[in-house]
Length: 355
Image 1 (cartoon, rainbow, N blue to C red):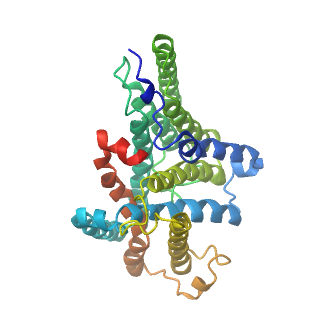
Image 2: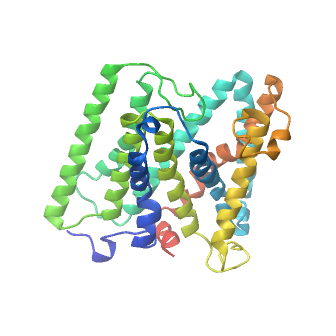
Image 3: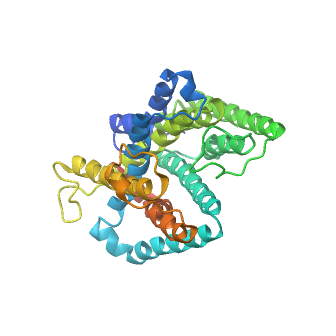
């Protein structure tokens, strides 16, 4: 039987909010990439201003959104005290152990942890947008497709020769050039797309139902991951499509769950809260990247001028302690996000996200 009218379009907050901040970012990123000169779609060139806008202000900044669901919220801090202490300690200890084996070992482990986080975020959004759907034949197809839309491009990447982009550092993914494997993966992915489209057409014909946000999420995920990794071979194109489609919806989700009113646990939720929220995450991102640039990379001195006075660290014995420490906000973000959203399952998730 058809879904009830109230569940026909299961927005998390509103059509406008979800549309612009959660569902539109991958399509907007695609439009920007389409307007780029061809060299930025198929080379490793990455202009400084683009790096500031995409990497600093979105990619690095969005990591600190986790603070507002954990350490900056007194109630949640009390509820999850043990978790919030143990996770960063475990991440740092694990990072030091990995870096002691080798720098590439550390970056490879962090890259695969990040990939897991990115993929699971898309699945999490899918679950939210499918939360009111009645059981129907082929109910496994949306979940299968959201995983395929992310894992197929990643598999294609692993089975390709070296690309003009990497997740963190060159060589962080294991790669083997296997054309037949790429063709087989492409055929399987195309078959899954056709099966999903057929199911959606049947559901509309049979019940006159069409879950708009779920389908927009799947379309945006499939288009941005395919274009960024398979269709194009440029560092800027990949980063735009990867970061914008992930970071902006994540921050929108965090903001949608802010405490109501300017209470003791919601200093950032009252009047003027949005500038405080955005200003805080940008400040944290600037300081983090400044420390990376001054102590390790030395790549963006024009942006982080003062940090250039810091001593560059090159000794392996020091880097094994320093690099995991500088990467701790990211690794903690990846791990904590596997816990902090879990309690939103069942009936409580929709109430929390639509309040």
